[in-house]
Image (cartoon, rainbow, N blue to C red; front, side, top):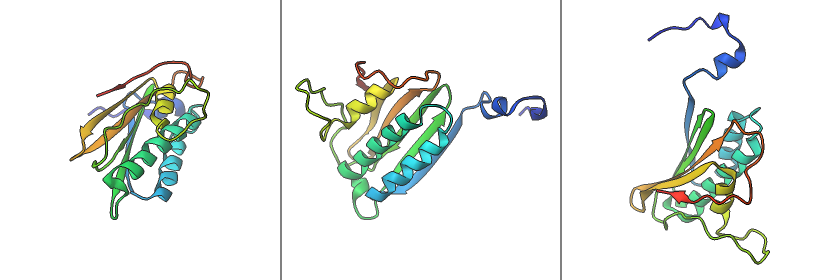
Length: 163
């Protein structure tokens, strides 16, 4: 493995080296831990101009894990994985037992966001979203967030979940 001479580069070059930075963390499957997961991820994205988007994504994915899977049961847990690169990866893994996570259709009747529309909101903030797993082994729901773009996700853009 080649050792680089970091004294010849800037702090930004060191921070954004070719290897993506990756974190995994496990949280207790309780509602109060959703806030902890959101804070953890938001701090990792500080200075990217996408902190608020990441906060929404993590909040929605972690809340779904706690509410709709065995992760919310006694001694349950959910996992958060974050990879920082030009296209960042944010994923939450649950313990299964619930329904298959899916994006609900957009409401055209002007109603405000209601339960069941969180993954739609995530899909509009992300470059791509998806889900893999099973009700027996657990699901991982993920979102790719483009850190090269300063603007928030386009709320009129249609994105579908992939498996």
